[in-house]
Image (cartoon, rainbow, N blue to C red; front, side):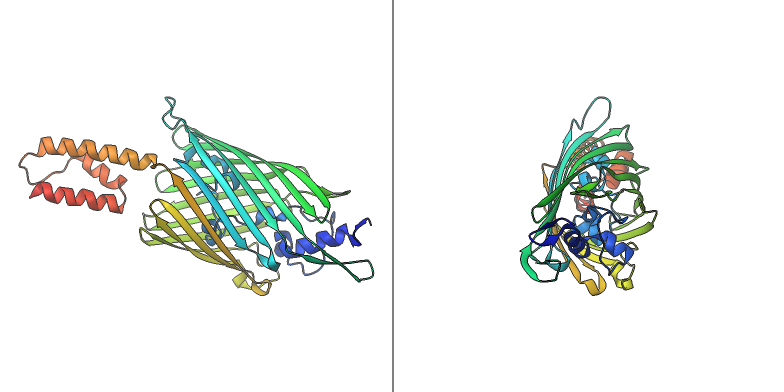
Length: 378
C-alpha cells in the first residue's frame, strides 16, 4: 500500500470516514472502513446544510424555494422571489467544521409566458483538525489534515404556475494530506405546488463519477428523495420525505415548525438514517429561527448519541422586497381606493376583493387592513 509521510491512504480514508462519514453512521460501523469495500465516497454530502433544514430532520426537499435550493432541490429556484444569500457554520463531530455559502438570483419574474427562472451557486466545505498519523508499526509520524468540498451551479424554471424543474452541476474535491481526488455529479429536481398549502417534490442527487484516491475509488452517495410539505396555516407547517439510496437502504425524515409569533419559529424533526448502532436520540433534531426585517437567523441542535452533538448556526439574507408582498401592497391600495369611492357613508363593506386580500396578507398586514376598516366604518 502506497503511503504518504508514513501514513497509508487507506488509513487516512478510514480516519476521515469514522470522523465525518454519514455512511459509517448509517451502517453503524465502529470498525474501520477501507476504500473500495462497497462504501460510498463524499459521504459529507448527506450532512444537512442550514440550521432550518437540519432542525426539521432533513425533510426539506419540498420546501427549498429559497437560498438552500442549489443544495436541496434546484427546482425551487423557479419559485425564488428575491436575491437571497445564506451561510452556515457547523461544529461537527471530532473537532470538524462544516461551512456553507449560497446565493440565488431570480430572472424575469414577470415574463409574458408566465414562467419564472432562477440560478444559484453554493459551496460546502468540511474540514478536519489535525489528525495524528502513524507508520505501519504504529509509531507517531506527526499530524495531517483533510477536507472535502462541493461547488454547485444550479438552474430552475417553472413550467406553468405550479410545476418547476431544475438541475445542478457540481464539482466535488477531497484532499487527505497531500493526496487529492475530484468527482463530478448532477442533481435533478422537481417541485409541484398543488395549492397554497401543499407542495410535492422529488430529487435524484449525486449522479456522477467515483471519487478516486490513487487507484481506490468509491461511488458518490446517489439517492432519490420524495417529499411533501403542508402548511396548515401561517403558524403551523409539517414536512416529510422518504430517501432511497444507492445501497438499497431506505430512510424516512419528518419535521414540523410552529410560529407562535411573527419573529419566531420553533422547529423539531426526526430521521431514521442515523440510528444504526446508536440510541434513538440520534435521530432527533430541534432548533429555532428568528425572523427580523425579512431576514432569518437560525440555530439547530442535532445529537448523535455517544458520538456527540452538533450545533448549527446559519442565516438567510434577502435583498429587495418580495414580489408577493409587493403584489399584495398594490392589490391593497387598489381595493382601498375602490372602497373609498364606493362606500361613501355606508357602515358595512363586503366586497369579494377585500375578502381575497385578507387571505393574501400576513398577520401584520391583516391587522392594518382591519384597522383601516374600523376607521372607514366610524
